[in-house]
Amino acid sequence: MSGYLTTHVLDTARGVPAQGIKIALYRVSGSSHTKIAETVTNDDGRTDSPILPAEKFKTGTYELVFFCGAYLEANGQASGDTKFLDEIPLRFGMDDAAAHYHVPLLLSPFGYSTYRGS
Image 1 (cartoon, one colour):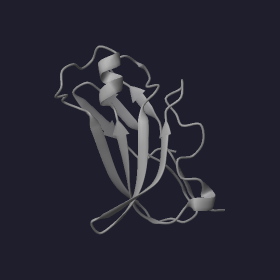
Image 2 (cartoon, one colour):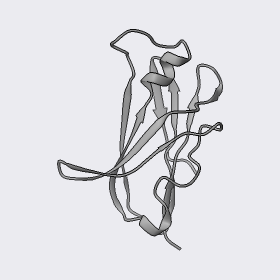
Image 3 (cartoon, one colour):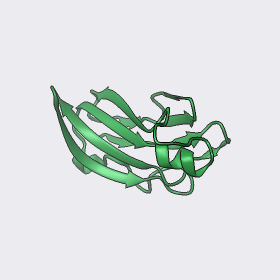
Image 4 (tube, one colour):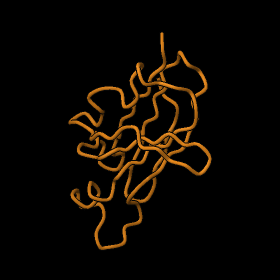
């Protein structure tokens, strides 16, 4: 079995899944970033399929970028041209070629957290 990567976003301030957030996935090698996927969260704050499916999975360093500014503004949690949180990059490594990696974002207007989920 080959590994794969999933993600989701929860709006912890409102206690709901964060729908409509664009997410980009990059493979990182030194100072080089190569975009390999882009998607948007669904009604459940999840992607409709793994952001990095098994057939494309490779171990290495990756970066998920969550474009949260528009979501926070649309929900009355941010305003103005300069937002405290707008694009949130999460860089992480995956070294097990057979593992399911789950890297979610827990979001509020003035902070966020992540973890390796299951």
